[in-house]
Amino acid sequence: QLRPHPVERMTHVVSHQHGVTVTKILREGKAEPQCWSFSYKQDESRGFLLEGAGLLLLRVLARRQAVPPDLVFPAIDAEGHLCTFSY
Image (cartoon, rainbow, N blue to C red; front, side, top):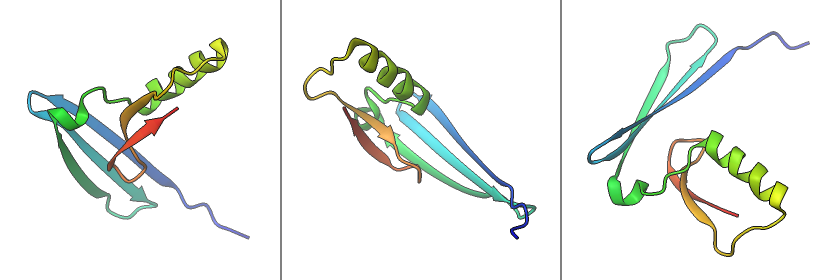
């Protein structure tokens, strides 16, 4: 039997004139939260797609049953690093 083990994950994304700063916070149980912060330049984050917007885009593409060729957006992976989403 497993005991409950609460895990709280938060991602804060702040846009500023030089680019984007991403702060990831992880808290397991009653332990002190762990924080990581990453900054990306404006050129790297241009066209940035957040997770909620990506899900909405997937629904629209599925509804239209069409995906434009080479549809790629910069995004953040689960660890907070810059990656690309391609459809």
